[in-house]
Length: 148
Ligand SMILES: [Zn+2]
Image (cartoon, rainbow, N blue to C red; front, top):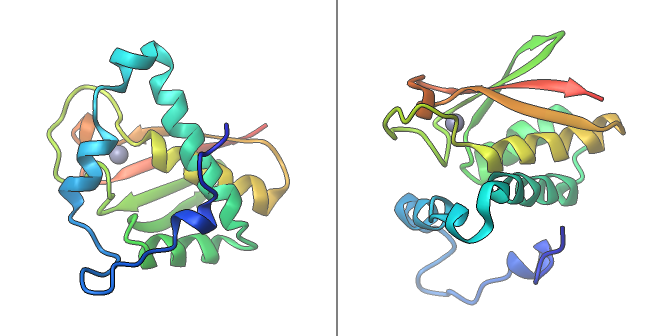
């Protein structure tokens, strides 16, 4: 996947009076626009790859780096709940927290982000599958990690 702007360029801002924060509604409007209408069934994969790109570019050395980044950038509160198989839980998720149950997981971006981070940390291919989500009626997101 290629981005129009690098993560470094995207992070620059000249919003001297408004600052860097936006309301979660703005993020979610873009996050949940009907991409499938334009991209077909591959839309989830595009969002996953976008999150993965961010995770890789963050180039974390430890899982603590990932936990701290997610808290600092308000992606969510990340907790490792099991080491083998690796299971990662996200509370107060930026994408789905508070959304209604819709019968499917919603956090493709977060799954890709976690996978991208873990690939850098482990130096192995990783797949993150969301097993719990507000979209499935849960109070948190949970990802099952497969090291390939
Ligand atoms: Zn979720």
